[in-house]
Length: 108
Image (tube, rainbow, N blue to C red):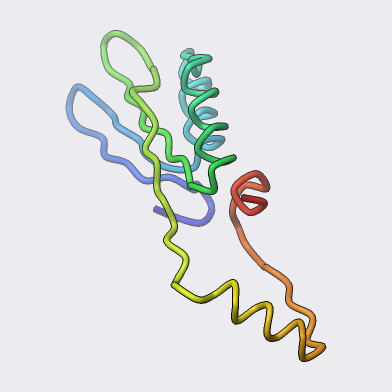
């Protein structure tokens, strides 16, 4: 995985596999003549809206490039964090969230 490509993968003799940020992996598939399914797009949006991080998995082999599926990574918020932020706000401290997540994920 690199911050530049936002995906990782392996190239074997007869197949290539990629996993990573949905936009990056979808672009990789499209560059190779494939397309992202509407199902994968819908699942990706559902995961983001639920506060998770979607990762796309794709492959390229003799049949072409295609999306295999979506992985749902769920961030677990430590217990009591909401209360801690509420306390900081009561003390007059402004809190902000800095994230590299998809805006839908961050909002959730």
